[in-house]
Image (cartoon, rainbow, N blue to C red; front, side):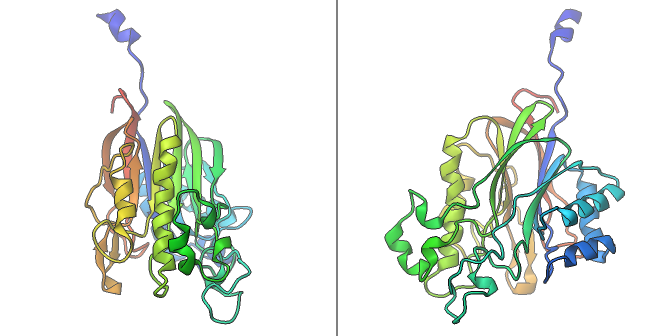
Length: 320
């Protein structure tokens, strides 16, 4: 009996993988870093939510990007001050605020925030950042892919939605990433995204159609992935309520390679917009991962209207 016990594998604790739209974006470059360094109230509330949840890796949305990741690292340090250390900080430059050179919204100028690849008053506004206890092994950025070049889209149906210059529009309004972390039981791919809201457009429904294809991008990519992965981020689409084409989000939630451990649970309080509670934030593990637990942080409106969403995951056969 003793020999059998000694031969059994020593499994690590489950990994807590999380996503959180912090809504920390500011109106100008450098302002978020200023507020983090000043320990501004919302910043500290966000840091407290993250620290209390104690994720092993977390994808944050709504964090303004700078080339040296100064704001992201400063935010990580605020989380550390709250008692939870996430050593590794990673981000690709987002598409927000990056000009397309076209007048996409037809207002007579081509330099406005709505004329960028992703809505933004400046390049990097409202980007994403990954904080992780474990090292980043490799990363791949799909954010430069053009919407018009995806092989599976219906170009005839999208012709009106694209309008002038739309064929040069990138699919991702913020970003589509694959980031591999070196977890204690092996590598784990984190597939991170923040989809465009399917509103703020006209009868051409450009944002609704773009949101759909941003979500379907993952449904197509999953078929080519090997190894364990987690799809996580803000889809800006509830499977039942509100605007947005529902077939796309439901295609992800019913995808044969994914599990949905928090089905039906709302994640954002949009009562101030007259929309009520909705589900737009997702942590969707691959089926080969074991889901030990899943949940959300308590609502913290002083931090964000969104709730931090997490899942505790292990490799198949691992012990909690």
